[in-house]
Length: 222
Ligand SMILES: Cc1cc2nc3c(=O)[nH]c(=O)nc-3n(C[C@H](O)[C@H](O)[C@H](O)COP(=O)(O)O)c2cc1C
Image (cartoon, rainbow, N blue to C red):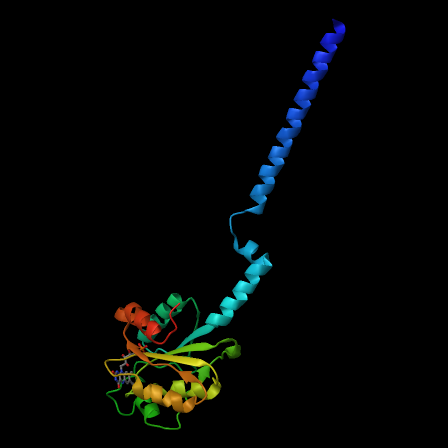
């Protein structure tokens, strides 16, 4: 009888040990399966070599872009900011070394600074600061107000400063009504080895709609 009881107890012990063993292996397998399929994270994608290839391919396909703008009274700034947010690209403001005062911009006065500059073929108002890594960008959006039918002379300074050969320049402007075509013609002359897209004239109130349509037309929509 004792023998039977001891065999019975041994069996129970063996059975419970086997059950524990299975439990722990289930836990491991469920843990390891959750490790293999984590929620996607930027870090995980970056360390995954196949994702790295995709990221660089994407960069090659879309290129790096920069929104450059000059704005004396804020209209073009608003449009430039909207564009930079839409395209998720950096923004660079052309800041004059000598800021334009209200008096400078009084175009009813023939001898105001802006008028004198626009009438002087050689005028190149100085820009404060510079873009150190212009070579990193393939597409440069360039925004400005229209002054006397074309772009302000400080834009000539900008195009004289940087060789944009091989890059795509996408010009946009704000104005009281004048179009951008004269400015685009001048940019073509100043940057003969760049690809200049169709230009856009808009105003802050219509910027989103106009920019979306324009980006589609020139093939730069995201
Ligand atoms: C000196 C000067 C000349 C201008 N000439 C024109 C012009 O020829 N045609 C036009 O439609 N608007 C003209 N404007 C109006 C500006 O293009 C318009 O207000 C623009 O939106 C200003 O942009 P900003 O606020 O970014 O400086 C002129 C403005 C100034 C100050």
